[in-house]
Image (tube, rainbow, N blue to C red):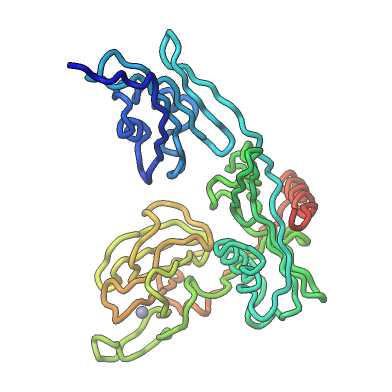
Length: 383
Ligand SMILES: [Zn+2]
């Protein structure tokens, strides 16, 4: 049977999908199972193949084969395995061999300043700040002042976010590292800092990747004192039912409402009111999807009717960490958060809680913090 001769090699590109296994992508592209698993195993010696971001392109060259009944051999493969690393595989007499090429990455953070204007949120977004960084900034600043009452249009915001620029031209932006506001008569400067030794000492605080909770709390650059206070509510919304006796909307009779109801859109993030440990996360009766946190000083807090729970029982959470999302599960008439706070086991009005506590840095932690502040404040705007 006459057949046209095959091309000696084929170049193609595969793209990693969300949740795709590295070897599955190769097999879909026509690589043999054997070559695909060998390539995947080699890559795994350098990076976790599952950690390569979705959307990453894999360039492949498939070589000459003996006949059309078998898959072409994998001759070479090239992939951006990490933001700072190219990996390529090529076939040798002994099988596939790997070459790693580091990509230089500049980690100078990005500083953005501007006028607060009539809306701090809109002004910051217009200046190019991501929605997530704006949210983090406002939450940080709100631990020290009231955004609605204390911020005026002539105030200047000042923030620094983690940024990485690869020599190959790509840029990626990460977490908020510094949140400041210049109000003329006074300046507030907050620096994110992890004073505890539990933090990996090798971790670069300017890195874009990394555990956000591990970045630590917000410390005043001047006073070197972290003051924590419940700035407001665990979710942005309005109080639809207060603490105390009320006629229950579903049951129709008067009974004690042991918490605050905060009306908010379904899916709005719910934040831990302060640091704590998750003592319960699951479905329970009228509370629906419910999370209970135990804090220090005999204090505990509960969050009900969630559409989705974002933490597991037994884990530690930081103040402001997202623990779930607003919903209407359990005995509820519409999307809202039912927020309860207990002191020594008894329900108290969440609005009465003052969680002011101060942590003074000293010794090596204070020296490390001062160096961190100096380094961040030396970052120039917009470069
Ligand atoms: Zn309620």
